[in-house]
Image: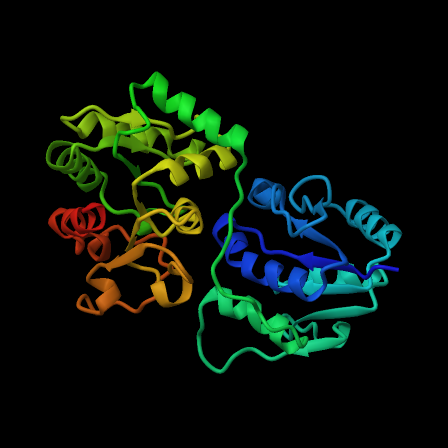
Length: 342
C-alpha cells in the first residue's frame, strides 16, 4: 500500500512559495506516495496546479474550522484519510495537535510552541537565521530526505496563458512588445517603495526602453495601482484585481521585466524565471529574498544597509517615515532594469 503523507503548510502566499522546494523534495523521495497539503484557503491557488501534490485539504481556521466542533470535523476528515506521516511546516501548536488527534503516526516538525511532546520527531531550530526555503528544507533533511535543488515553483497552464495574452491584446500589447510589470503592493505599508517612484520608473521604462507598462497585483492593490497610473505621463495598463492568482502568474511569466516590493508577486515572478528586480527596506533579503535559480537582482534601501541605524528585519507596521525604501532611487532601479533588458 502506498505511503500517505500530509504536509501542513504555512498561511501566507509568499511563504507557501518558499515551501515548494520542500514539496518537490518529499515527492522525489516518495514517488509513489499519496501526498496531500493542508492549506489556508487564501493560498489554495498557489498549489492547486502543483503536479507534485495529489490533494489539497483546506483548513479554514478563521471560518469553517474556527470553532471546536469545526476543528473536530477536520480531525475526523484527516482520520478517514489514514495518513502515515505529517510534516509540519507551520510552527503552531494547534496544527501539531490536530495531526496528533488525527492519529497520524509520524509527526515531524520544529520543536516550537511547546509541542515537542506531541511530535514524534522534533527538529531543533537552526543556530542562526536562515532563508525560509532552507528553514523548511531542514525538516526534510532531518527526515533523511536530500533536497533536489532550492529553487521554488509556481505552475500555470495554457488556459491561464491564453487569458493573460488576451487581456494584454485588448489593451494593444502584441507578443513582440517589451512588457514591464510594476507591482507596487505589499502586505504592509513600510515595505512599499513610494508610488511616485514607481510612476517615475514606469515613465522612464516607457520613454527610454519602449516598454509597455503594466501595473499589477492583487485586488487589494487596485487603488494603489490606479494611483501609480494617474501619476504617470505615459500610458499604463492596470491589471491589479483583474486576474486570478494563476492568471497573475501567467502575466508575470509573459513579462520581460518585473519590478516589485518584497511580496508574493515578486516571488511568483522569480518562480516563473522572469527577470525581476526586488526592492527591500525593512525586511531582510537574506531571510525572505529571492532564492535559487532565476534572473533576479535585489536592491536594498538605507535601512537594509544599516545607514539609517534601523534594525533589520524590522516589523514596525506603524513606521511612517519609509526612509529605508526611500533610499532606493529611481535612477538605481532604472539602471538595473536597463542592464537586465539589454
